[in-house]
Image (cartoon, rainbow, N blue to C red):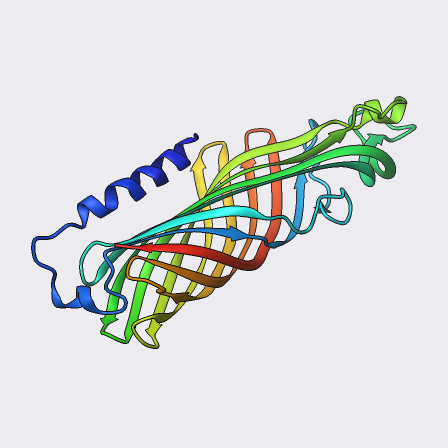
Length: 292
């Protein structure tokens, strides 16, 4: 299990113990007064991914659609897990995690740089070629959010929060094993790996219809421009929106149906590597909740 999975498992395991109190305060009896909510669900988002990676000559090129151009599936299901820990009446901490891997091999048309005839190196021109290519775009995401409830009553919870979405990304393409010929030799593998720390300001609103039914909404946004060190820069924009309705079927178990939308547009530079990505995923989440 990777470090994100270990962190999430530890929080889920320890949070109930941390929330134990000898005498429950009044707000613990409210519909939204659970100390800990753990969730496991099935998420099948619609995906739209565009990215570009530089070659060894530093040529970034245009953004390529990984679905339309390189044949990645535009919809794939995956598990999603999370835990929300209400530390006190007004302070909460939440964790959410999911991983989505995609790859494909098909004939694709891409632009490559070749030497410009009649001119000295390193002058080159960009041409379009159709070749069998293998592509990959993997996302591993953990979202950590602290929120403070400005309003917290039996019916309403309005909270302001600061979140951090850690996105481990791996994307790129290369000639497939059955690509032969001189043109294939001129296509350099273009791959990038990056961990993008994407902070967000969040607004959370929850409404208790009654003791059993709760509406949950979450909106997050942030734009950033970071110089991580002398040779590493990251800039981009993030939009994170979700909504769900929870049904507390029994005292400690319930179900939820939600919709999650996440959009990222970023540029990344590390030494000789240049990368740009614009991706979003959106879709319904069907989950099982445990209340403590």
